[in-house]
Image (tube, rainbow, N blue to C red; front, side):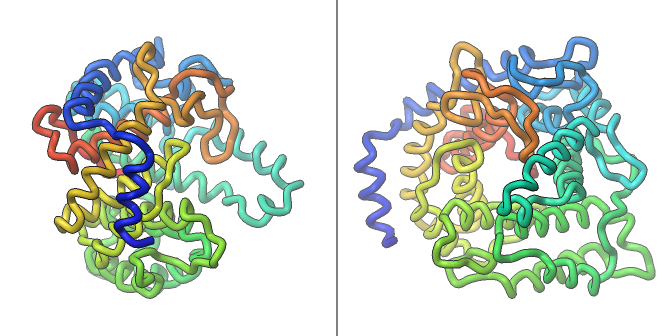
Length: 380
């Protein structure tokens, strides 16, 4: 789609927030979102947070690694996390650290296995459903990023990652690049683990972490397309999946502090795909635009216009009486990695709150508003 059609589409959707309206609403969000966190916080374990306001299946405080990661990221963005909260959150997350360096709560994995069993009757899920080990790695990756926000770190080295170039090259090539959202997520996880495992992989008989990371990026370039995206795209692939793959790949660039090779093409691609509907779709384009615009002024005015329009979309997920966002526009999310862990209700949830607040923080930066809010952008 030509860029001028993007502008026409934006204009036809109705008036977006202007700068002052956006600032006023964001100020409300920043001031009141801690109220939502307190409303879902554990009573006995102050590092525990519920997934939803009232819909969780499990009301005990013996699970919820991902929930605490979301809370840590939100407090990091606010730039107001206390030493006491750092201790509470780190302790809860590290409570679920395993001997191989992975971090996950068994409750979520048990719920995911129930989802697996029920999905076997569906031919689509039978061939595409991630393995339990992939879910464990995803939760571990989130836990590591949450600990990073807290100025903490795992006590054990993650043992599920290789420390030589040949193995890393083989790992990248065996990823399913016909599903770039999955391959991109696993590649960015690889880079994150390599960075956080530097001491383990930099021994005198191994390549340095920097060499391994550079090698990984050189290999993955083979899967890069002319439009800046990655993977093999069939003609019927939805834009949501293509954009989600780009977003996941750019998280690797974020962790490695690298400039994307085709920033301008990625900006064009992102502005041409108008995604919305849930917390993930609302976020993906914003991550792409933010990571790419750090390195170029290309189409800056269009990006600002897009962000002002997107604030309107985000506001539809905001519950002003409860001071949080919901993953879906009119209800909370009921699952995590496909596993049902809550009832969907007309209320906010910590997953939707984290995703939308992260998007707001990046849009505030791109629109030149951050002097008024002093928000931080976490590595995720």
